Length: 402
Image 1 (tube, one colour):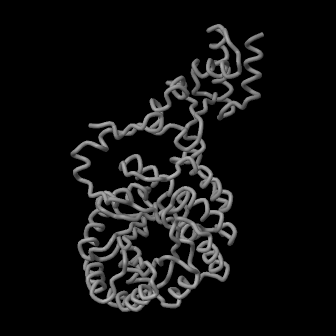
Image 2 (cartoon, rainbow, N blue to C red):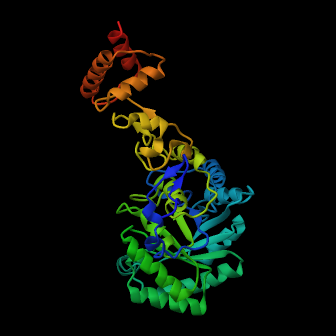
Image 3 (cartoon, rainbow, N blue to C red):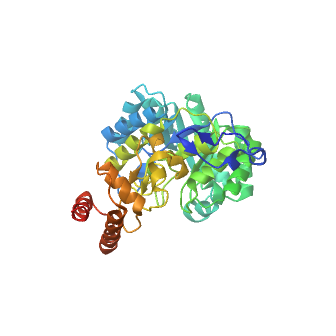
Protein backbone atom coordinates (compact mmCIF):
# COMPACT_ATOMS: atom_id res chain seq x y z
CA UNK A 1 0.00 0.00 0.00
CA UNK A 2 1.13 3.56 -0.66
CA UNK A 3 -0.21 6.71 0.95
CA UNK A 4 -2.73 7.72 -1.75
CA UNK A 5 -5.47 7.35 0.82
CA UNK A 6 -4.06 10.22 2.89
CA UNK A 7 -3.94 13.91 2.11
CA UNK A 8 -2.41 15.67 5.08
CA UNK A 9 -5.08 17.53 7.07
CA UNK A 10 -7.67 17.00 4.32
CA UNK A 11 -8.72 13.33 4.20
CA UNK A 12 -7.82 9.86 5.39
CA UNK A 13 -9.78 7.07 3.72
CA UNK A 14 -9.31 3.32 3.43
CA UNK A 15 -5.89 2.22 2.16
CA UNK A 16 -7.59 -0.86 0.72
CA UNK A 17 -9.03 1.35 -2.03
CA UNK A 18 -5.53 1.43 -3.48
CA UNK A 19 -4.16 -2.09 -3.10
CA UNK A 20 -3.15 -3.81 -6.34
CA UNK A 21 -5.93 -6.38 -6.09
CA UNK A 22 -8.50 -3.57 -6.04
CA UNK A 23 -6.87 -1.21 -8.54
CA UNK A 24 -6.20 -4.08 -10.94
CA UNK A 25 -9.94 -4.63 -11.29
CA UNK A 26 -10.61 -1.02 -12.33
CA UNK A 27 -10.73 0.23 -15.89
CA UNK A 28 -10.58 3.93 -15.10
CA UNK A 29 -10.66 6.38 -18.00
CA UNK A 30 -7.95 9.00 -18.22
CA UNK A 31 -10.47 11.72 -17.45
CA UNK A 32 -14.01 11.90 -16.15
CA UNK A 33 -16.36 14.85 -16.64
CA UNK A 34 -19.41 15.77 -14.59
CA UNK A 35 -22.60 16.58 -16.47
CA UNK A 36 -24.87 18.34 -14.01
CA UNK A 37 -28.61 18.23 -14.68
CA UNK A 38 -29.88 20.29 -11.71
CA UNK A 39 -31.50 22.85 -14.02
CA UNK A 40 -33.50 20.17 -15.83
CA UNK A 41 -33.79 16.89 -13.95
CA UNK A 42 -33.35 18.63 -10.61
CA UNK A 43 -36.22 20.97 -11.39
CA UNK A 44 -38.40 17.90 -11.97
CA UNK A 45 -38.49 17.50 -8.19
CA UNK A 46 -42.21 17.91 -7.39
CA UNK A 47 -42.94 21.49 -6.40
CA UNK A 48 -39.57 22.91 -7.49
CA UNK A 49 -39.56 25.79 -9.98
CA UNK A 50 -36.42 27.64 -11.05
CA UNK A 51 -37.07 30.98 -12.71
CA UNK A 52 -34.73 32.35 -15.37
CA UNK A 53 -32.59 34.35 -12.93
CA UNK A 54 -32.42 31.33 -10.59
CA UNK A 55 -31.06 29.17 -13.38
CA UNK A 56 -28.45 31.74 -14.33
CA UNK A 57 -27.25 32.02 -10.72
CA UNK A 58 -27.03 28.25 -10.29
CA UNK A 59 -25.20 27.84 -13.61
CA UNK A 60 -22.63 30.44 -12.58
CA UNK A 61 -22.03 28.69 -9.26
CA UNK A 62 -21.79 25.27 -10.95
CA UNK A 63 -19.13 26.72 -13.21
CA UNK A 64 -17.29 28.20 -10.24
CA UNK A 65 -17.21 24.79 -8.55
CA UNK A 66 -15.70 23.28 -11.69
CA UNK A 67 -18.49 21.28 -13.34
CA UNK A 68 -17.45 20.51 -16.92
CA UNK A 69 -20.94 20.29 -18.45
CA UNK A 70 -24.20 21.98 -17.47
CA UNK A 71 -27.53 20.72 -18.73
CA UNK A 72 -29.29 24.07 -18.73
CA UNK A 73 -32.77 22.76 -19.35
CA UNK A 74 -35.22 21.71 -22.04
CA UNK A 75 -36.02 24.67 -24.30
CA UNK A 76 -39.30 23.11 -25.48
CA UNK A 77 -40.77 23.32 -21.95
CA UNK A 78 -41.55 27.05 -21.99
CA UNK A 79 -40.47 30.39 -23.42
CA UNK A 80 -38.82 31.22 -20.10
CA UNK A 81 -36.80 28.00 -20.13
CA UNK A 82 -35.74 28.79 -23.69
CA UNK A 83 -34.67 32.29 -22.62
CA UNK A 84 -32.80 30.95 -19.58
CA UNK A 85 -30.78 28.49 -21.64
CA UNK A 86 -29.98 31.17 -24.17
CA UNK A 87 -28.83 33.53 -21.41
CA UNK A 88 -26.63 30.84 -19.85
CA UNK A 89 -24.89 30.11 -23.15
CA UNK A 90 -24.05 33.82 -23.40
CA UNK A 91 -22.30 33.94 -20.02
CA UNK A 92 -18.99 32.73 -21.38
CA UNK A 93 -18.68 29.98 -18.77
CA UNK A 94 -15.88 27.44 -18.87
CA UNK A 95 -18.47 24.65 -18.70
CA UNK A 96 -20.05 23.41 -21.92
CA UNK A 97 -23.80 23.98 -22.07
CA UNK A 98 -26.21 21.21 -23.09
CA UNK A 99 -29.94 21.07 -23.59
CA UNK A 100 -32.30 18.14 -23.18
CA UNK A 101 -34.35 17.01 -26.16
CA UNK A 102 -36.97 14.59 -27.24
CA UNK A 103 -36.19 12.57 -30.36
CA UNK A 104 -37.62 15.38 -32.49
CA UNK A 105 -35.76 17.66 -34.89
CA UNK A 106 -37.69 20.69 -33.61
CA UNK A 107 -35.98 20.24 -30.24
CA UNK A 108 -32.60 20.11 -31.98
CA UNK A 109 -33.36 23.41 -33.71
CA UNK A 110 -34.14 24.99 -30.35
CA UNK A 111 -30.84 23.76 -28.91
CA UNK A 112 -28.99 25.33 -31.83
CA UNK A 113 -30.92 28.56 -31.48
CA UNK A 114 -30.01 28.70 -27.79
CA UNK A 115 -26.33 28.38 -28.67
CA UNK A 116 -25.78 25.05 -26.88
CA UNK A 117 -22.61 23.01 -27.29
CA UNK A 118 -24.47 19.74 -27.17
CA UNK A 119 -27.76 17.96 -26.70
CA UNK A 120 -29.00 14.95 -24.75
CA UNK A 121 -31.59 13.08 -26.83
CA UNK A 122 -33.89 10.96 -24.71
CA UNK A 123 -35.97 8.01 -25.87
CA UNK A 124 -37.17 4.96 -23.90
CA UNK A 125 -35.70 1.48 -24.15
CA UNK A 126 -36.75 0.02 -20.76
CA UNK A 127 -39.12 -2.86 -21.45
CA UNK A 128 -41.83 -1.76 -18.98
CA UNK A 129 -41.85 1.64 -20.69
CA UNK A 130 -42.08 0.15 -24.18
CA UNK A 131 -44.70 -2.43 -23.27
CA UNK A 132 -47.08 -0.47 -21.07
CA UNK A 133 -46.46 3.24 -21.68
CA UNK A 134 -45.51 3.65 -25.34
CA UNK A 135 -46.56 0.37 -26.98
CA UNK A 136 -43.31 0.37 -28.99
CA UNK A 137 -40.78 -2.21 -30.12
CA UNK A 138 -37.03 -1.64 -30.31
CA UNK A 139 -37.53 -1.16 -34.05
CA UNK A 140 -39.86 1.77 -33.30
CA UNK A 141 -37.20 3.29 -31.04
CA UNK A 142 -34.58 2.93 -33.76
CA UNK A 143 -36.81 4.46 -36.41
CA UNK A 144 -37.64 7.46 -34.23
CA UNK A 145 -33.97 7.96 -33.33
CA UNK A 146 -32.23 7.92 -36.71
CA UNK A 147 -33.30 11.24 -38.20
CA UNK A 148 -32.93 13.12 -34.94
CA UNK A 149 -29.38 11.90 -34.25
CA UNK A 150 -28.20 12.54 -37.78
CA UNK A 151 -29.85 15.95 -37.82
CA UNK A 152 -28.24 16.88 -34.49
CA UNK A 153 -24.78 15.96 -35.73
CA UNK A 154 -25.41 17.80 -38.97
CA UNK A 155 -26.16 20.89 -36.86
CA UNK A 156 -22.75 20.44 -35.18
CA UNK A 157 -24.08 19.57 -31.73
CA UNK A 158 -22.25 17.07 -29.54
CA UNK A 159 -24.92 14.40 -29.50
CA UNK A 160 -25.53 12.18 -26.48
CA UNK A 161 -28.00 9.37 -27.10
CA UNK A 162 -30.01 8.76 -23.94
CA UNK A 163 -32.00 5.49 -24.11
CA UNK A 164 -33.59 5.88 -20.73
CA UNK A 165 -34.56 3.09 -18.38
CA UNK A 166 -31.61 1.26 -19.91
CA UNK A 167 -31.21 -0.98 -16.88
CA UNK A 168 -34.71 -2.44 -17.36
CA UNK A 169 -34.30 -3.07 -21.08
CA UNK A 170 -34.35 -6.56 -22.52
CA UNK A 171 -30.78 -7.34 -23.47
CA UNK A 172 -31.70 -8.35 -27.00
CA UNK A 173 -33.56 -5.06 -27.50
CA UNK A 174 -30.59 -2.99 -26.31
CA UNK A 175 -28.15 -5.02 -28.41
CA UNK A 176 -30.26 -4.76 -31.54
CA UNK A 177 -30.91 -1.04 -31.08
CA UNK A 178 -27.29 -0.03 -30.55
CA UNK A 179 -25.92 -2.35 -33.24
CA UNK A 180 -28.26 -0.94 -35.88
CA UNK A 181 -27.81 2.60 -34.63
CA UNK A 182 -24.07 2.42 -35.19
CA UNK A 183 -24.72 1.41 -38.78
CA UNK A 184 -27.14 4.19 -39.67
CA UNK A 185 -26.91 7.01 -37.11
CA UNK A 186 -23.97 6.83 -34.70
CA UNK A 187 -24.16 9.50 -31.96
CA UNK A 188 -21.12 10.94 -30.16
CA UNK A 189 -21.80 9.18 -26.84
CA UNK A 190 -24.26 6.73 -25.31
CA UNK A 191 -25.94 7.10 -21.94
CA UNK A 192 -26.52 4.15 -19.66
CA UNK A 193 -29.55 5.39 -17.75
CA UNK A 194 -30.62 3.73 -14.50
CA UNK A 195 -33.90 5.61 -14.41
CA UNK A 196 -35.31 3.63 -11.51
CA UNK A 197 -32.01 3.31 -9.63
CA UNK A 198 -32.53 -0.44 -9.55
CA UNK A 199 -29.27 -1.89 -10.88
CA UNK A 200 -26.48 -3.19 -8.70
CA UNK A 201 -23.05 -1.60 -9.26
CA UNK A 202 -21.84 -4.85 -10.84
CA UNK A 203 -24.79 -4.80 -13.24
CA UNK A 204 -23.91 -1.22 -14.21
CA UNK A 205 -20.32 -2.28 -14.86
CA UNK A 206 -21.62 -5.04 -17.11
CA UNK A 207 -23.79 -2.61 -19.06
CA UNK A 208 -21.05 0.01 -19.45
CA UNK A 209 -18.66 -2.60 -20.83
CA UNK A 210 -21.34 -4.04 -23.08
CA UNK A 211 -22.25 -0.64 -24.55
CA UNK A 212 -18.59 0.25 -25.09
CA UNK A 213 -18.02 -3.06 -26.85
CA UNK A 214 -21.12 -2.71 -29.04
CA UNK A 215 -20.49 0.89 -30.06
CA UNK A 216 -16.89 1.85 -29.38
CA UNK A 217 -18.25 5.20 -28.15
CA UNK A 218 -17.76 7.07 -24.87
CA UNK A 219 -20.31 5.97 -22.28
CA UNK A 220 -22.11 8.27 -19.85
CA UNK A 221 -23.93 7.20 -16.70
CA UNK A 222 -27.08 8.69 -15.19
CA UNK A 223 -28.65 7.13 -12.11
CA UNK A 224 -31.50 7.83 -9.75
CA UNK A 225 -31.33 7.01 -6.06
CA UNK A 226 -34.39 4.81 -5.58
CA UNK A 227 -32.41 2.09 -3.81
CA UNK A 228 -29.91 4.46 -2.20
CA UNK A 229 -27.02 3.56 -4.50
CA UNK A 230 -26.89 6.47 -6.93
CA UNK A 231 -23.36 7.66 -6.25
CA UNK A 232 -21.98 4.15 -5.67
CA UNK A 233 -23.49 3.07 -8.99
CA UNK A 234 -21.95 5.98 -10.88
CA UNK A 235 -18.53 5.42 -9.31
CA UNK A 236 -18.81 1.76 -10.34
CA UNK A 237 -19.58 2.89 -13.88
CA UNK A 238 -16.42 5.01 -13.89
CA UNK A 239 -14.49 2.01 -12.62
CA UNK A 240 -15.74 0.18 -15.72
CA UNK A 241 -14.71 2.98 -18.07
CA UNK A 242 -17.59 5.48 -18.16
CA UNK A 243 -16.23 8.92 -19.02
CA UNK A 244 -19.13 11.19 -18.00
CA UNK A 245 -21.21 11.06 -14.82
CA UNK A 246 -24.55 12.84 -14.51
CA UNK A 247 -25.63 14.50 -11.27
CA UNK A 248 -27.87 17.00 -9.52
CA UNK A 249 -26.94 19.38 -6.71
CA UNK A 250 -28.19 18.07 -3.35
CA UNK A 251 -29.48 14.97 -5.13
CA UNK A 252 -32.56 16.75 -6.45
CA UNK A 253 -34.86 14.96 -8.87
CA UNK A 254 -38.06 12.97 -9.16
CA UNK A 255 -38.92 10.37 -6.52
CA UNK A 256 -35.72 9.81 -4.52
CA UNK A 257 -33.61 12.10 -6.69
CA UNK A 258 -30.43 11.72 -8.71
CA UNK A 259 -26.83 10.95 -7.87
CA UNK A 260 -25.54 13.85 -5.74
CA UNK A 261 -23.05 16.23 -7.36
CA UNK A 262 -21.20 16.88 -4.11
CA UNK A 263 -20.75 13.20 -3.30
CA UNK A 264 -19.66 12.38 -6.84
CA UNK A 265 -16.98 15.06 -6.79
CA UNK A 266 -15.54 13.81 -3.51
CA UNK A 267 -15.86 10.17 -4.57
CA UNK A 268 -14.04 10.69 -7.86
CA UNK A 269 -11.19 12.65 -6.33
CA UNK A 270 -10.71 10.92 -2.99
CA UNK A 271 -12.05 7.37 -3.28
CA UNK A 272 -11.09 6.63 -6.89
CA UNK A 273 -7.98 8.81 -6.69
CA UNK A 274 -8.67 10.72 -9.91
CA UNK A 275 -7.02 14.10 -10.29
CA UNK A 276 -9.67 16.80 -10.53
CA UNK A 277 -9.81 20.57 -10.20
CA UNK A 278 -13.11 20.74 -8.32
CA UNK A 279 -13.53 23.46 -5.69
CA UNK A 280 -14.65 21.49 -2.65
CA UNK A 281 -14.48 24.69 -0.61
CA UNK A 282 -17.30 26.11 -2.77
CA UNK A 283 -19.69 23.17 -2.39
CA UNK A 284 -21.46 24.57 0.67
CA UNK A 285 -22.18 27.84 -1.18
CA UNK A 286 -23.60 25.90 -4.14
CA UNK A 287 -25.67 23.62 -1.92
CA UNK A 288 -27.05 26.55 0.09
CA UNK A 289 -27.94 28.44 -3.09
CA UNK A 290 -29.88 25.49 -4.50
CA UNK A 291 -31.60 24.92 -1.14
CA UNK A 292 -32.68 28.55 -1.07
CA UNK A 293 -33.93 28.66 -4.66
CA UNK A 294 -35.57 25.22 -4.65
CA UNK A 295 -37.12 25.39 -1.19
CA UNK A 296 -35.89 21.85 -0.53
CA UNK A 297 -34.04 21.47 2.77
CA UNK A 298 -31.33 18.90 3.46
CA UNK A 299 -31.03 16.23 6.11
CA UNK A 300 -28.67 17.48 8.79
CA UNK A 301 -26.40 14.48 8.27
CA UNK A 302 -26.40 14.50 4.46
CA UNK A 303 -22.99 13.38 3.15
CA UNK A 304 -20.46 16.12 2.26
CA UNK A 305 -22.71 19.18 2.71
CA UNK A 306 -24.84 18.24 5.74
CA UNK A 307 -24.71 20.82 8.53
CA UNK A 308 -24.24 18.19 11.21
CA UNK A 309 -21.38 16.23 9.64
CA UNK A 310 -18.69 17.65 11.91
CA UNK A 311 -20.74 18.24 15.03
CA UNK A 312 -19.86 15.97 17.92
CA UNK A 313 -22.00 15.33 20.99
CA UNK A 314 -20.54 12.04 22.17
CA UNK A 315 -17.74 12.50 24.66
CA UNK A 316 -15.53 9.77 23.18
CA UNK A 317 -12.53 11.26 21.40
CA UNK A 318 -13.87 14.78 21.83
CA UNK A 319 -10.40 16.31 22.11
CA UNK A 320 -9.40 14.82 18.74
CA UNK A 321 -12.35 16.47 16.99
CA UNK A 322 -10.54 19.78 17.28
CA UNK A 323 -6.88 18.74 17.34
CA UNK A 324 -6.75 15.71 15.00
CA UNK A 325 -10.06 15.60 13.12
CA UNK A 326 -8.95 12.84 10.74
CA UNK A 327 -8.87 10.47 13.70
CA UNK A 328 -12.63 11.00 13.95
CA UNK A 329 -13.71 11.77 10.36
CA UNK A 330 -12.81 10.51 6.88
CA UNK A 331 -12.50 14.07 5.64
CA UNK A 332 -11.46 17.11 7.61
CA UNK A 333 -13.96 19.96 8.04
CA UNK A 334 -11.61 22.32 6.19
CA UNK A 335 -12.04 20.31 2.96
CA UNK A 336 -15.42 21.97 2.50
CA UNK A 337 -14.47 25.18 4.29
CA UNK A 338 -15.98 24.36 7.67
CA UNK A 339 -14.99 23.96 11.32
CA UNK A 340 -15.71 21.13 13.69
CA UNK A 341 -18.15 21.86 16.51
CA UNK A 342 -18.69 20.35 19.95
CA UNK A 343 -22.18 20.47 21.44
CA UNK A 344 -23.60 19.46 24.81
CA UNK A 345 -26.42 17.02 25.47
CA UNK A 346 -27.32 13.63 26.89
CA UNK A 347 -24.33 11.88 25.27
CA UNK A 348 -21.65 14.37 26.36
CA UNK A 349 -18.65 13.45 28.52
CA UNK A 350 -16.37 15.30 30.91
CA UNK A 351 -13.99 16.21 28.08
CA UNK A 352 -16.87 18.03 26.38
CA UNK A 353 -17.49 20.10 29.51
CA UNK A 354 -13.79 20.90 29.88
CA UNK A 355 -13.55 21.95 26.24
CA UNK A 356 -16.62 24.18 26.57
CA UNK A 357 -15.20 25.84 29.68
CA UNK A 358 -11.86 26.49 27.97
CA UNK A 359 -13.61 27.94 24.95
CA UNK A 360 -15.39 30.36 27.28
CA UNK A 361 -12.07 31.30 28.88
CA UNK A 362 -12.87 29.55 32.16
CA UNK A 363 -9.88 27.70 33.62
CA UNK A 364 -8.87 25.80 36.75
CA UNK A 365 -12.30 24.26 37.34
CA UNK A 366 -12.23 21.34 39.77
CA UNK A 367 -12.99 17.81 38.62
CA UNK A 368 -15.89 17.73 41.08
CA UNK A 369 -17.47 20.83 39.50
CA UNK A 370 -17.00 19.40 35.99
CA UNK A 371 -18.70 16.18 37.11
CA UNK A 372 -21.64 18.12 38.54
CA UNK A 373 -21.98 20.18 35.36
CA UNK A 374 -21.93 17.04 33.23
CA UNK A 375 -24.64 15.43 35.35
CA UNK A 376 -26.92 18.42 34.90
CA UNK A 377 -26.14 18.70 31.18
CA UNK A 378 -27.12 15.05 30.70
CA UNK A 379 -30.31 15.50 32.70
CA UNK A 380 -31.26 18.62 30.77
CA UNK A 381 -30.48 17.01 27.40
CA UNK A 382 -32.58 13.98 28.29
CA UNK A 383 -35.46 16.10 29.55
CA UNK A 384 -35.66 18.28 26.45
CA UNK A 385 -34.74 15.43 24.07
CA UNK A 386 -32.15 17.58 22.37
CA UNK A 387 -29.04 19.71 22.68
CA UNK A 388 -28.52 22.51 25.16
CA UNK A 389 -28.47 26.03 23.78
CA UNK A 390 -25.78 28.58 24.81
CA UNK A 391 -28.02 30.22 27.42
CA UNK A 392 -28.77 26.89 29.10
CA UNK A 393 -25.07 26.01 29.18
CA UNK A 394 -24.12 29.39 30.64
CA UNK A 395 -26.79 29.09 33.32
CA UNK A 396 -25.51 25.67 34.45
CA UNK A 397 -21.91 26.87 34.53
CA UNK A 398 -22.76 29.96 36.59
CA UNK A 399 -24.68 27.97 39.17
CA UNK A 400 -22.01 25.28 39.55
CA UNK A 401 -19.18 27.82 39.86
CA UNK A 402 -20.83 29.81 42.67
